[in-house]
Amino acid sequence: MTSRPRPRPAIRHGLTLIEATIAMMILGMVLVSVMQGVGLSAKLQHRTADELRGAALAKELADRVAAYDYDEPVGAAPLPTIGVDSGEILGDAGTFDDIDDWHGHTESPPAHADGTAMGFLTGWNRSVAVRWVLHGAPSTDTGAEDGAKLIVVVVTRPDGSEVGRVSRLALDSENLRGH
Image 1: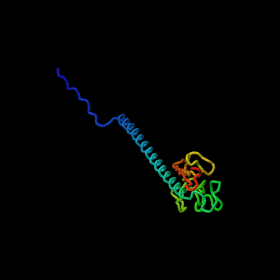
Image 2: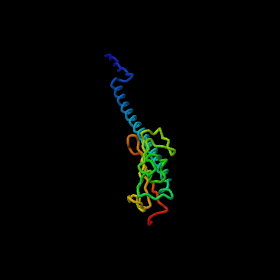
Image 3: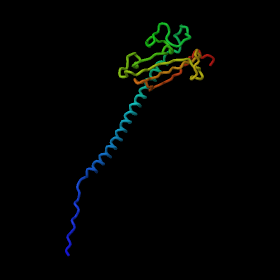
Image 4: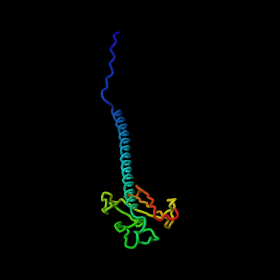
């Protein structure tokens, strides 16, 4: 009996449609994951840059405010209030002559020391609050002069979220009351 040689199975070349579809689905899932990671990284980088910019803007203005005299100029009677005095205009830093005149001051957009706006920060805001505090415990408001004023500068982005806050304690070195 003669046996016939068995036919060899044909060698396949290439992928079947199902294999190609599965490979594309796996590749698509990998690409989606990578793109989400890139998006999160970009958001985090943007937020970090805003926080650094906000901190620098707050520090710059707090330092500028702290450089002013603690009280009214020599010869002027100290006033029992915080804020602008007669002859000073809220919002016009060029008219301020002491630290507490800055209370309630806002800038939007923030401005350079010479008063020119930082146009690239449209929608950003810097605000200043000044209050009397207890010399030995600056977190305690006194509501009256005690020889110490706390300067707080807050910076917000256009969406209103806070991205910078700096506090400076100013002391009346000439008249620390009982300290």
